[in-house]
Image (cartoon, rainbow over all chains, first blue to last red; front, top):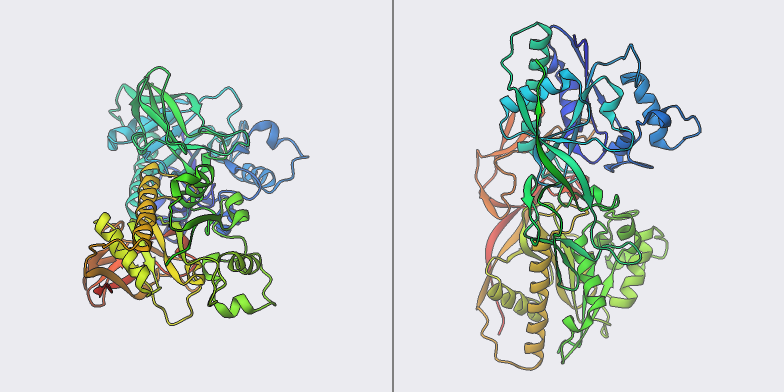
Length: 293
Length: 293
């Protein structure tokens, strides 16, 4: 039984879709009310939202690792904010969490369409994903299970995921993608309602996902500055296969750098926020995940 | 006779196309060398480039008004930087300017394609524009002649204009638009070379332009926060006509606000940097400008 759902926006202050969806719902709360559970909304990084920046000191969506949440010596803006948000929406790892399910709203400058980023493997999380894929056949699912601790916002609740929608520039609201994200949330709330009420949902037995394999960085000089960009033939080609020998980067010296690895899918191609993180795209493998009855 | 041309990039630190074109040319200067004149390049707002922000204190591309350049009490980062750049690339209004022609490289999150923003009405400026329109039939020309003093970068030289290319998010390099901008600059340098050498250029007699009429702001609440976004049917429709009754905005209350004025062309639709400046798009009138022989 899901008793409390949190919809969070503005974890990155320059990703406006989530910020304005939350503002819309705070103005019109009946849109997200359902009978069997309560829904709360939260504007996450208010200072970054005000400054239309991704973050103030460091990425809030990498600040929810348990050891960081328990470390009282961390006093950056986002470290303190993460602790505060964890006390409202968590607590992470608690047997009596304040919230059962978190959906965290993001946008990307990559051509990711409507997509889910998920690390949680709980039954209800994946049944929700199966339902959403049924409702929105173009929805894509990217699973991230790194070797480091999950420090995303949604990790502080027992169930949940993030939504990534693109392409949309930072600091811009695109009505088309705003409306698609909004509809996806209503489907999610409808699913939780039906699941709570014991409806006999006819869900697919399996869901196609893109499983994280590795990151690819830009070509860089000895100072770390990039000296090449994503090749024009790879730009906007998220969730498509890249094969050995295909163009990957175009350098400032007009050289084409080709891809040398095994065939994999490219995701988060040329995302603005990842220039500083050191990757030009993610490589993923297509798999099928079974959905528990 | 044009003796010295300046190509400037990074006037806005998060518009990477100009930044990396200048880096490319500083690494490979022969690409922009021509026989009859010298070409210099300048990275304009180095601190903003480093921080991948539009500006530090205020917009550098509104900081070259003559009264501001002469006002020694202005001591913001960009006010001081504008004075420094004016001493290298100006001086504005001088009879013996350091540079004869400035082309300032910008990008926009709007779907402006390859476009020129021009205020200067000099003969050579417009002959250059006519030549570029001949070489690039998709090139669009937006003329801005406001009632306030021109404070753009290119205003400090006797001739010149800005190039705006989009749609590209802030903080992103798109190879396709990078290459288009690069080609346009080579055409411009070729034109100046031919003009200097007295080649008999067969230029068109007139050029179609979009003449600035007015700005349209987003719907806002009493605190100035936006409560609506560009309607999905208007998004990406730069350089297209908007007629009375057509959808303009979609509010957070799901209301459609329609356009009520005379038929005009929409430009800079949903540009990220203009949310804070208070406009959602520019309205312009299509005209024809004669080119002097």
